Amino acid sequence: MTKMENINNKYLPQNIKDYLIKREISSYAIYNWGIEYREFYRRKYITIPIYDQDGKTIFFKLRKDPFAKNNKPKYIIYPKGISHIIYGQENLSTSGEKIIICEGEFDRLAIESRNIPAITSTGGSGYFKKEWIENGELAYYKDIYVCFDNDEAGKKGSLKVLSILKDLGYRNIYNIEIPPYMGKDITEFLQNGGILP
Image 1 (cartoon, one colour):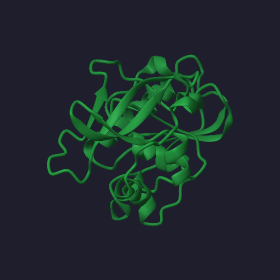
Image 2 (image 1 turned 135 degrees about the vertical axis):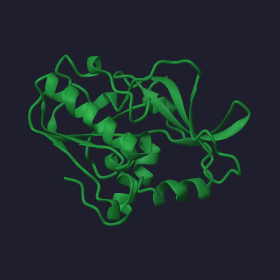
Image 3 (image 1 turned 180 degrees about the vertical axis):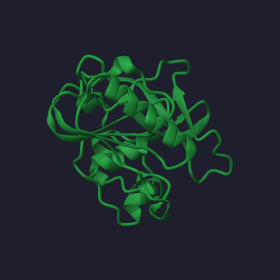
Image 4 (image 1 turned 30 degrees about the vertical axis):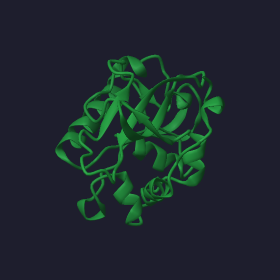
Protein backbone atom coordinates (compact mmCIF):
# COMPACT_ATOMS: atom_id res chain seq x y z
CA MET A 1 0.00 0.00 0.00
CA THR A 2 1.61 3.25 -1.05
CA LYS A 3 1.39 6.40 0.99
CA MET A 4 -1.11 8.04 -1.35
CA GLU A 5 -3.26 4.90 -1.46
CA ASN A 6 -3.34 4.92 2.32
CA ILE A 7 -4.51 8.52 2.59
CA ASN A 8 -8.26 8.45 2.83
CA ASN A 9 -9.00 9.70 6.35
CA LYS A 10 -12.32 7.89 6.16
CA TYR A 11 -13.08 8.35 9.81
CA LEU A 12 -11.59 11.06 11.96
CA PRO A 13 -14.08 12.37 14.52
CA GLN A 14 -14.10 16.13 14.95
CA ASN A 15 -12.97 15.90 18.60
CA ILE A 16 -9.92 13.85 17.53
CA LYS A 17 -9.10 16.28 14.71
CA ASP A 18 -9.46 19.19 17.15
CA TYR A 19 -7.18 17.37 19.60
CA LEU A 20 -4.48 16.95 16.92
CA ILE A 21 -4.75 20.56 15.79
CA LYS A 22 -4.47 21.67 19.43
CA ARG A 23 -1.25 19.66 19.50
CA GLU A 24 0.09 21.92 16.71
CA ILE A 25 -0.47 19.33 13.95
CA SER A 26 -1.95 21.02 10.89
CA SER A 27 -4.95 19.74 8.93
CA TYR A 28 -2.59 19.33 5.99
CA ALA A 29 -0.22 17.12 8.03
CA ILE A 30 -3.15 15.05 9.30
CA TYR A 31 -4.23 14.44 5.72
CA ASN A 32 -0.78 14.14 4.16
CA TRP A 33 0.45 11.54 6.65
CA GLY A 34 -2.78 9.52 6.61
CA ILE A 35 -3.72 9.96 10.27
CA GLU A 36 -6.98 8.16 11.01
CA TYR A 37 -9.11 6.83 13.84
CA ARG A 38 -9.57 3.08 13.59
CA GLU A 39 -10.25 -0.03 15.60
CA PHE A 40 -7.40 -2.42 16.42
CA TYR A 41 -7.30 -5.03 19.16
CA ARG A 42 -10.99 -4.21 19.90
CA ARG A 43 -10.26 -0.60 20.79
CA LYS A 44 -10.26 2.70 18.92
CA TYR A 45 -6.92 4.37 18.24
CA ILE A 46 -5.48 7.35 16.45
CA THR A 47 -3.51 5.52 13.76
CA ILE A 48 -0.18 6.73 12.43
CA PRO A 49 0.99 4.80 9.36
CA ILE A 50 4.74 4.19 9.36
CA TYR A 51 6.21 4.20 5.87
CA ASP A 52 9.41 2.86 4.39
CA GLN A 53 11.55 4.99 2.04
CA ASP A 54 9.41 3.93 -0.92
CA GLY A 55 6.26 5.27 0.73
CA LYS A 56 4.81 1.85 1.56
CA THR A 57 2.99 1.37 4.85
CA ILE A 58 4.82 -1.28 6.86
CA PHE A 59 3.04 -0.95 10.21
CA PHE A 60 0.92 1.35 12.34
CA LYS A 61 1.78 3.19 15.51
CA LEU A 62 -1.42 3.38 17.54
CA ARG A 63 -2.16 6.17 19.99
CA LYS A 64 -4.98 5.32 22.36
CA ASP A 65 -7.96 7.62 22.34
CA PRO A 66 -6.98 10.58 24.57
CA PHE A 67 -10.62 10.92 25.68
CA ALA A 68 -11.01 7.28 26.77
CA LYS A 69 -11.23 6.58 30.49
CA ASN A 70 -8.35 4.11 30.36
CA ASN A 71 -5.77 5.16 27.79
CA LYS A 72 -2.77 3.25 29.15
CA PRO A 73 -0.41 2.34 27.65
CA LYS A 74 -0.47 5.44 25.52
CA TYR A 75 1.12 3.89 22.41
CA ILE A 76 1.24 0.41 20.93
CA ILE A 77 2.11 -1.05 17.52
CA TYR A 78 0.14 -3.05 14.97
CA PRO A 79 1.07 -5.73 14.21
CA LYS A 80 2.70 -6.63 17.52
CA GLY A 81 6.35 -7.60 17.59
CA ILE A 82 7.51 -5.52 14.63
CA SER A 83 10.96 -3.89 14.82
CA HIS A 84 11.23 -0.17 15.48
CA ILE A 85 12.43 2.08 12.68
CA ILE A 86 12.71 5.77 11.84
CA TYR A 87 9.41 7.56 11.27
CA GLY A 88 10.13 10.01 8.48
CA GLN A 89 12.31 7.77 6.35
CA GLU A 90 11.43 9.82 3.29
CA ASN A 91 13.64 12.54 4.82
CA LEU A 92 16.71 10.30 4.84
CA SER A 93 19.25 10.69 2.04
CA THR A 94 17.63 13.91 0.86
CA SER A 95 18.94 17.44 1.24
CA GLY A 96 17.94 20.67 2.89
CA GLU A 97 18.91 23.51 5.17
CA LYS A 98 18.00 21.61 8.34
CA ILE A 99 16.43 18.54 9.85
CA ILE A 100 15.22 17.92 13.40
CA ILE A 101 15.52 14.60 15.21
CA CYS A 102 12.77 14.53 17.84
CA GLU A 103 11.31 12.18 20.43
CA GLY A 104 7.91 11.12 19.16
CA GLU A 105 5.52 10.78 16.26
CA PHE A 106 3.27 13.69 17.25
CA ASP A 107 6.36 15.88 17.76
CA ARG A 108 7.49 14.99 14.26
CA LEU A 109 4.08 15.84 12.80
CA ALA A 110 4.06 19.20 14.63
CA ILE A 111 7.50 20.02 13.21
CA GLU A 112 6.51 18.90 9.70
CA SER A 113 3.42 21.14 10.05
CA ARG A 114 5.94 24.01 9.96
CA ASN A 115 7.54 22.69 6.76
CA ILE A 116 10.67 21.52 8.57
CA PRO A 117 11.88 17.97 7.83
CA ALA A 118 11.94 15.79 10.94
CA ILE A 119 12.54 12.19 11.95
CA THR A 120 11.95 10.20 15.10
CA SER A 121 12.33 6.65 16.33
CA THR A 122 9.13 4.65 16.67
CA GLY A 123 10.68 3.22 19.85
CA GLY A 124 10.65 6.35 22.00
CA SER A 125 13.34 8.45 23.66
CA GLY A 126 15.81 5.67 24.48
CA TYR A 127 15.72 3.80 21.20
CA PHE A 128 17.83 5.10 18.34
CA LYS A 129 20.13 2.87 16.28
CA LYS A 130 23.49 3.99 14.96
CA GLU A 131 23.03 1.91 11.80
CA TRP A 132 19.99 3.98 10.81
CA ILE A 133 22.26 6.90 9.87
CA GLU A 134 25.76 5.40 9.63
CA ASN A 135 25.88 5.52 5.83
CA GLY A 136 25.58 9.29 5.59
CA GLU A 137 21.78 9.39 5.44
CA LEU A 138 21.77 12.89 6.99
CA ALA A 139 24.91 14.18 5.27
CA TYR A 140 23.07 16.44 2.83
CA TYR A 141 21.46 18.61 5.49
CA LYS A 142 23.35 21.78 6.36
CA ASP A 143 22.33 21.66 10.04
CA ILE A 144 21.09 18.80 12.23
CA TYR A 145 19.08 19.60 15.35
CA VAL A 146 18.16 17.26 18.18
CA CYS A 147 15.15 18.14 20.34
CA PHE A 148 13.74 15.72 22.89
CA ASP A 149 11.48 16.22 25.90
CA ASN A 150 13.07 18.02 28.84
CA ASP A 151 12.45 15.16 31.30
CA GLU A 152 15.16 12.72 32.40
CA ALA A 153 14.36 10.16 29.69
CA GLY A 154 14.39 12.88 27.02
CA LYS A 155 17.71 14.29 28.19
CA LYS A 156 19.31 10.83 28.13
CA GLY A 157 17.81 10.12 24.72
CA SER A 158 19.06 13.38 23.20
CA LEU A 159 22.57 12.79 24.59
CA LYS A 160 22.56 9.32 23.04
CA VAL A 161 21.56 10.68 19.61
CA LEU A 162 24.08 13.54 19.82
CA SER A 163 26.81 11.03 20.72
CA ILE A 164 25.88 8.81 17.74
CA LEU A 165 25.96 11.81 15.39
CA LYS A 166 29.37 12.92 16.67
CA ASP A 167 30.79 9.38 16.50
CA LEU A 168 29.68 9.13 12.87
CA GLY A 169 31.42 12.40 11.99
CA TYR A 170 28.34 14.51 11.37
CA ARG A 171 29.00 18.25 11.67
CA ASN A 172 26.82 21.26 12.45
CA ILE A 173 24.91 19.42 15.17
CA TYR A 174 22.82 21.41 17.62
CA ASN A 175 20.88 20.42 20.70
CA ILE A 176 17.62 22.28 21.31
CA GLU A 177 16.87 22.33 25.02
CA ILE A 178 13.29 23.24 25.85
CA PRO A 179 13.21 25.57 28.87
CA PRO A 180 10.85 24.21 31.57
CA TYR A 181 8.79 27.41 31.49
CA MET A 182 8.07 26.72 27.79
CA GLY A 183 6.71 23.22 28.38
CA LYS A 184 7.93 19.65 28.58
CA ASP A 185 8.05 18.79 24.87
CA ILE A 186 7.97 20.28 21.37
CA THR A 187 4.18 20.39 21.36
CA GLU A 188 4.00 22.51 24.52
CA PHE A 189 6.94 24.59 23.34
CA LEU A 190 5.05 25.46 20.16
CA GLN A 191 1.78 26.00 22.03
CA ASN A 192 3.61 28.51 24.21
CA GLY A 193 4.87 30.49 21.25
CA GLY A 194 8.24 28.79 20.82
CA ILE A 195 9.94 29.15 17.45
CA LEU A 196 11.96 26.35 15.90
CA PRO A 197 15.28 27.17 14.21
